[in-house]
Length: 412
Image 1 (cartoon, rainbow, N blue to C red):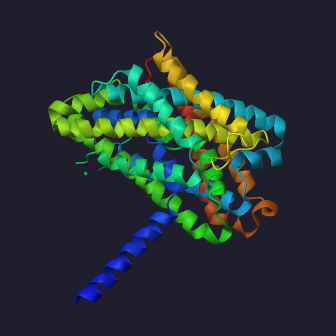
Image 2 (image 1 turned 90 degrees about the horizontal axis):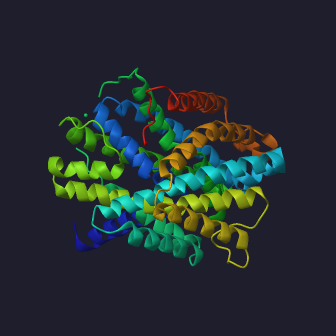
Image 3 (image 1 turned 45 degrees about the vertical axis):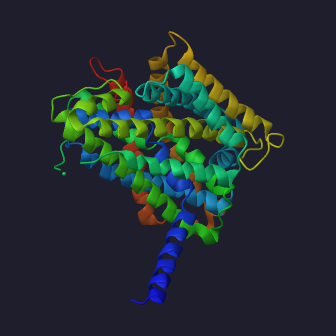
């Protein structure tokens, strides 16, 4: 091949890479941020306790994630409005207010969990939580308040790449029938699809100003993000199954403990990579969760919202974002704060809230007056409603097994 031909091929290759990165955004960010501290712990515990036997759960989870996220992205693209906006317009302010308050309480507990992940991951490197948490909180606040949508999106996409730090090292389906095993399966599903994701994804698609003509690219972004998130989860399960489970370490108290336990079994570099992934995931989610909450609450109440707006244009949006960061980070620094209780309540609220949000989504996406020719087809509706029914059953099981004598929910 001549030098000119080689240069032409390289230019074509880089154009394709640039095109791919240009379409990535809300879908990749939303799916990957849910691989947060609680998610990493759940996947780590699944690998440590059950080895490779629960890897099959990730296949239907991937399908459910794609279906749910695609509907949100489609509604945002077609209507140009966020999910909270649409719920308020079509179901009334009173019902929307109740949902938004549930979202606010739930996400506050989730944000506390993320800053707990920040604290524990940096402590693995000898950095005190009284240093890492305030600095982390200040960084994520600065990133959103002084950035615009494009700069924030780029920063979040870079954070997504750090998930590749997880080491991976093969699968017959087996369903554990004990309470802890059922809780683990439910926990894997629950940690992958959360209520806040639907609000954040649709709001981000709207703020990115995606048009109906961009729908193909938006859909590809969602599919890539969903697959990437599940692949990362797959690697975490395998990493812990191949090391901790094989050596008889079947219980870990946190994601940070999983990273610490990997050191003598897989080498300190594998442990460091795991810890870096945990720190990135926690900081990433600590930024996104308050942002998703500010989006949904302000949209639901008819207030201005958006990263591209200034503090003066959307004061309620930025003040709510600020208060959520300060409050959740502050909880980590309070001696004796009931962190586990806060996290447990937020997880149960997640389980109760998710089915309701999904039902609202399906009612909205099938309104021809709203979506036109972009409503669900019959086959897609069967899959979507089947996913909802399955998720309702699983989240109901999660709530029940949370209070089952001797039972435990992964992540606590």
